[in-house]
Length: 127
Picture 1 (cartoon, rainbow, N blue to C red):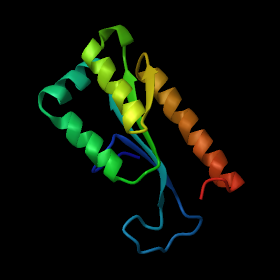
Picture 2 (cartoon, rainbow, N blue to C red):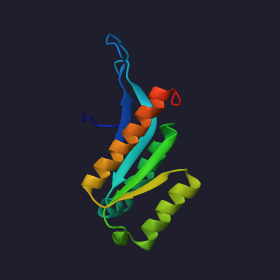
Picture 3 (cartoon, rainbow, N blue to C red):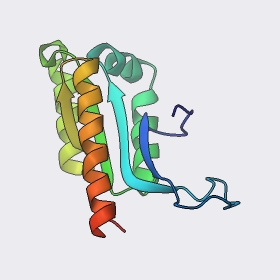
Picture 4 (tube, rainbow, N blue to C red):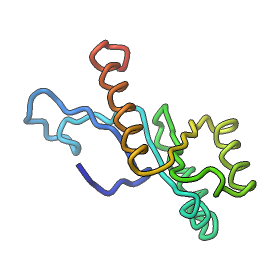
């Protein structure tokens, strides 16, 4: 399902077994993963217009435990400055940096994350 998010590009929701909850999310629970997806050119644009810092701040403020910055495209297209920023995200802000080569690989990665979250919910290890 597609919706506009206040921060990040992807969140994972746990749907309740029964309907009828009047909460803003209709009883759905946000699972503890938030993902921001960028191509190298998107990253360059967000650095130029100062969206990058705002997006990172919002993701950190979300309180979600697992923050993922997914870079889609050729790693060689990243500048050394961009690589340094991504390294800093991982080392100082606890982000997981994930690289995919194209949209198909991104979709596969999102599916793998969803399966891992589902297994965590089923096993009870994800509260």
